[in-house]
Length: 289
Image 1 (cartoon, rainbow, N blue to C red):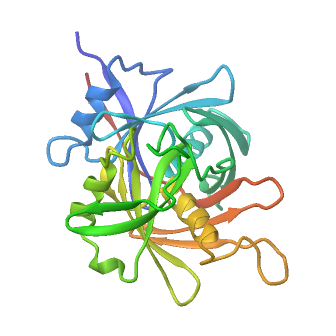
Image 2 (tube, rainbow, N blue to C red):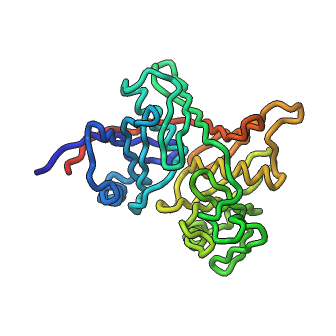
């Protein structure tokens, strides 16, 4: 027997997902449907599927299924869109909500525009890790002194865990990197038992950071919120930028991606990363299961 579900297509800087309220429309096999619906031409076309429900430990719960069906731990752009979804649809009237994810509970602060709908959100992403033996196959769980090889090239990467793993690689000319070829090789490198997201980053003259990303399970995407956070942390660790301005005030690090820009602040007081950016609804529709 078939059933009809309602979905919303949303994006954060072009990082687009299909959103379903599973309290209203349960989905038995989300991995399979993520693969099916994410396809261009034969599906809706997206970077994956995000399921929203009430949570027993937070206001709401988010589950992420990438375009290849694998379940993701955290999505920065997706979490902003979840905040917009639940507020715009009247599931909450709070402008600060908590969100349960596989990488812990995140706090999202919502900003509304003149139309009363959410336009931007800031996500407290928690404290980053520069080592994690579960995600990096080295004795110390970092990439210190490790050279990664891909497509006949060698890369020095900084590992940053934002709940999910990231290998941040600084380059002189980002346009010279064949992300579609190099990205999947590094994603599946033996140093990453859980695979990894890969960021290629070029520091710019104005102090901003130009980033392109190969996302674990999705491939090239227009933007990656956790990747932007990892890039900011790696740049601070490498001395390419700072967490504060010369006068000691907090600094917002400008990350430029294919789909647009995010502002990242790595707070010295609590050690947390705060990510601010837009959330946009593209369209809504129905699907028959």
